[in-house]
Amino acid sequence: MKSFMKIFAAVFVFTALVFALPLGAEAALGDKPDPSGAYIKYTVDVKKPEGETLAYNWFTMKKLDYVFEKGDLVEYDVMFTFNETGWGHIDGAITGCDATPVFRDMPGVTDQNSVRLNTSLDLSDYAYGVWYHRVIDVTENEDHIGVKWVNFQIGCYPISDELEYQCVTMYDNIVITNNGEVKLVIFKDESDWPETRISTGATSHCKAKLEMDVFSDADLAAFKAAEEAKAAEEASRAAAREEANASREASREQASIEASEQASLESSIEASIREEEQASKSEAEVKSGGSNMVLIVCAAGGIILIVVIIIIAVAVSGKKKKTEKTAETEEKK
Image (cartoon, rainbow, N blue to C red; front, side, top):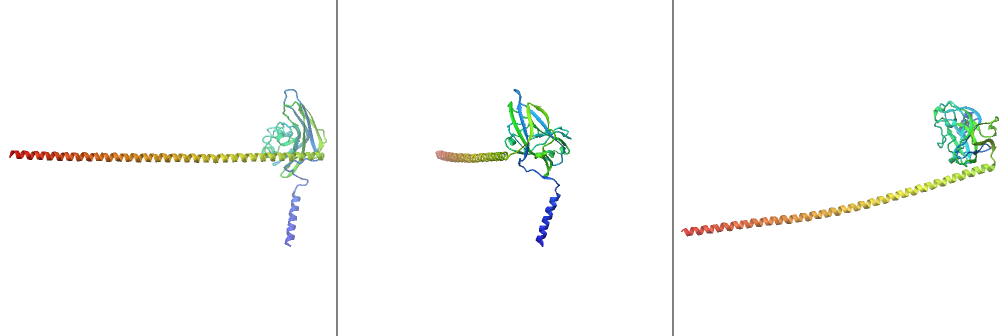
């Protein structure tokens, strides 16, 4: 009976949790990229005049009118094919933020690797040639609670000395999540591609095309292989760093031991020198004391001799005077 009650309670709790979830809510994304199905393909051909380093382009993809709530995260997967700054960002117009009218310049907002949102910044360490899952905490700055994201834009602001080149940037799984729940899907699959015409914004020295494409199995296998190769490379670099750190630490320890031994040797030598100096000083003091004693003895002996001589002289002189006196007396008689 008790076992039955435990099973019943477990089933009840599970059912309650299931029905407590918002209807239609999707599970939040993981912390790794997961490209699949359809994706947004942003192809940009750059052709600049001699001496020019900047180019830019923006597409407005769809209307959002989403109001940010506390805890909202903007997440997406991205990869690009040209190694430079200015690729892989997203953008859009916003209202309700006194500091800026555009998503890319929201103050204090970064992704999980502390890269800010501006399209001129560098994501190449993370998204060049491999998929990168980007997570942006919009309301970490609480001033952004209540800000409205008006529309969704994809753009680039490449900065390169190359005058002519092409870059393809791929986006997938663009969503807003909050506390494990997908609040808004901007793009995940074919059904999220807008039916209305996508407008082109400002452009300079760029010929750009925004379209939807579908990953092939070969594409996904190549992405996975590239991700595994990058992970292996990072693991190898980490192991090399650990080995170098261990070697440096061992060198420091050895140097510390050698320094300690040297200090101990120097201390021992100094102590030996002090002992020798002390012994020499003591010996000198002994010799000096002996010499002084000899001098004192000699001086004392000399004084005694002088006293004896004086006594003898006095005695002799007294005896002589007595003899003389006796002689004088006898003569008088």
